[in-house]
Image 1 (cartoon, rainbow, N blue to C red):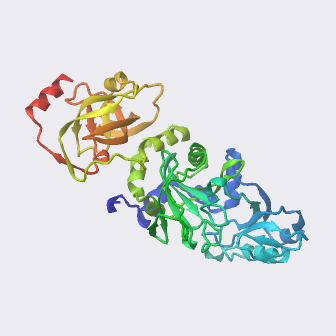
Image 2 (cartoon, rainbow, N blue to C red):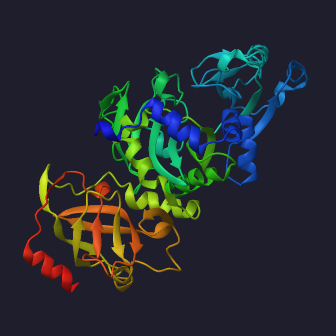
Image 3 (cartoon, rainbow, N blue to C red):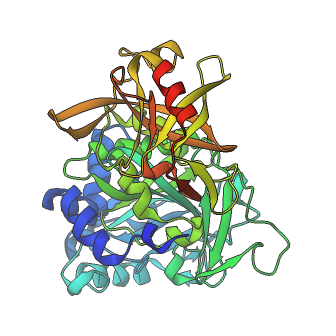
Length: 436
């Protein structure tokens, strides 16, 4: 992972959180109750809320015996899992409940806990807060062997309607059954294209197996991965939120549900994936993404990290290369391309893209803002699979009329990692370029 690709705290706060999120959006994300209200308006699945507490009288007016056997008691504005009590079962005589950490608590204990929440014991700056009781989701069978007692969740970073990075957070004995990395949960990176886990970290250090077991943490298949990405991307329909971390739980019967949203998500996800977040955010920053469905397609097309065909380190390529691009039929088609380190992204000629069947004006609606000698314009963007010196690359290319230019394709810096460029262009290459 290159240091230039890593997103730091200052860049996250100043460039992404500040510029992409409005004050309204941050207030919505800060309150779990407000977040749930907006999710319901957008018909995005979220665990049911049984009861809300806004003032002390609400506590004493509520009949605690009406609660189901399992549930979660939470502060609305709590951070890092603080103040959350997860109830696993109720005793047969109905006198107490057992938590996921096997503690026994009574209704009186919970009343006192809610009073602490209302007084701000778990909120930033100790400001008064509200509390709520939410449905307990439980563990999906896909994670039973990997999670300790509590409910695992999936954190997805979304920017400009595109899911750019994800990780699975697995509760441990140390974390008390909570899926919070700061409290000792395991963070496992997820390949965006397939939904299969790749690398894992625990306390910031790489691990291969679940602690004290021989269960590999790579190769776990996330159920309903397309739905996970879809509901995460749809959260950008909440007013004022363009950059966020979406926490998703997998209900055993009803599938993925949004648990909460963070307008300033932590950065440990980079360690879990062994990949820098900054570079991924920059790749989608200037795209004009039509909707969240298109955002998911983009994510799966360009952020595949699990099975990359890597070029040899520092492999040298020429300033003009014969590359291969996959056409509509899935065949490799040879194309002459200019390696242009002065360009950020890659581009392809309109007629060539249409001839290959990989571009259609009616089908490809995502655009990117480009500045040229003619001024500002928005160019179509398409998903492309290509091979440079044997290295398979998934990328986004802008589509433009290049009929008056020497080369039908240019390859920008974003697709040139791991290559050295020989700047000399041979006479033979110039002749080929004139014939394209």
